[in-house]
Length: 137
Image 1 (cartoon, rainbow, N blue to C red):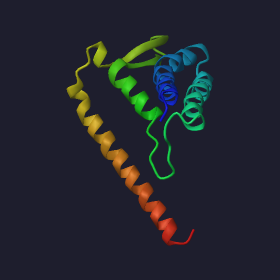
Image 2 (cartoon, helix red, strand yellow; image 1 turned 180 degrees about the horizontal axis):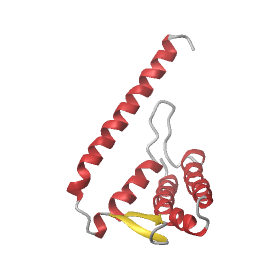
Image 3 (cartoon, one colour; image 1 turned 60 degrees about the vertical axis):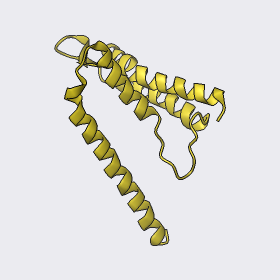
Image 4 (cartoon, helix red, strand yellow; image 1 turned 45 degrees about the vertical axis):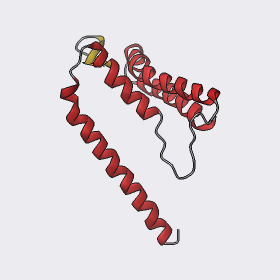
């Protein structure tokens, strides 16, 4: 893998991670519900195109794609989450990250359940693909 593609992948992850927690709530603040659709289209599409069509990640045919979801999750874990609040009338921090003084111990059950859920989902996808091959489809 070339350094340029690695750098492109890092930038796409940064766009996704920062965009979801800063640009997305800002768009919701400007255009209440439709802003979320616009932000999703811009942020996620840009990161997806960089990762999958510029080939920033080595997406081989039979491998899992771990790209934008990982960077968004790490952004939430490290930096916290901001969101739009109707009661506050704008953007507020709804959860602190590690860099903002959050206690990681409270998040461990959630992290464990996310890993279990992702593992079950991956297993079900593999089982479905195997059943499709055995069925001749």
